[in-house]
Length: 426
Picture 1 (tube, helix red, strand yellow):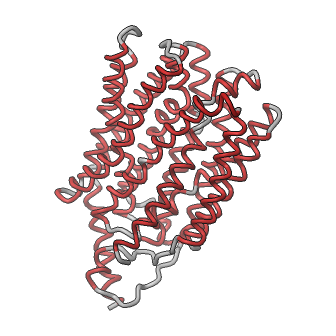
Picture 2: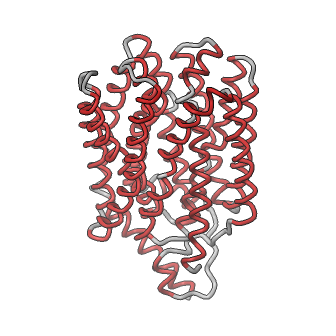
Picture 3: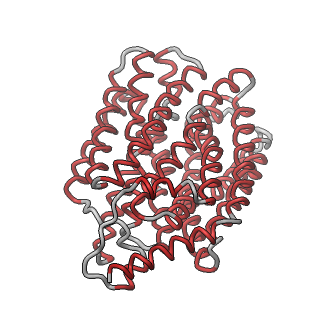
């Protein structure tokens, strides 16, 4: 496909992720309004978030399998429609138990990203994927920022339920856009071996259980799974409780929260692209490059978060500087982990491999908001955020060191398989 025809797809996927993340993460900035409406505490609010994460976790393997068997573009359109519909259901829930149930249903589409990422992998080759994933993942923090603006400036006038009606409606509109304008690509289309062979017709690679089982034999994937399990804990805790932490424990008011979180989210967004760019650049020099960038990100993120949380409340400028440094390092690993999976797994089971990785990481992280709520009620939000995040990131650093021993061997195995397939097809 010509380069100019690929970028509109990237743009559509960017807006899908932006608005989906806005809808998903909006509940954090709306915590106070929702808690007041239903009369619930931190633990009960944590259960609301955990419900959606549990549903998404359970469905990851199912979505991964479907994406490897059927047209990913049409399944993404379905996921967008489900997002809009379930958000509307949560907006009309009159009681706390029904809100828990309907909010849990919004997790159905949260496990739909493996199809998006693998489709992008068939539009762009290995040396470009990190930057593209970093660009797409800009949507996550910007979505959180947009959600915060909606919570602070729109929700007080319209009410939190009407904000959910708005974001749900956008999901349905995007479903229509994806269905009609996103083109499916043959699996493996952008692999360099097939591009160099100049094939007139791309071979069709279909899901097989044999190749799916091979995923678990890749030793790099063992460490990818382990870091994924630990790595999402800090993200969930910070996403859903940091807003409340600023307000209740550091004494920030509405404008102060916005002027603190705004720069943080923008720097965080830049960190995704920086991480993807650094990962691609390092990968060109050494096949260990993406893992090295990822390990740097989690280690430095842990250090600067510790310094930020322990900054005296009165020193707001120092706190902001340390949080900005945390924000630039936090997302460095995100685009590189996705690219690493596709660097070692054959095209026809990439969605399954990515889905299994997400399943494992979310299996533990789904309980992070509930755990954070319990710790916060027993101590305070500061202790909850800091203890969970630091422990998780230090574990990730250790797991990345383990992956360094096997990544080169696993990448070479994939490249040999792609050369073999390209030779057979010519």
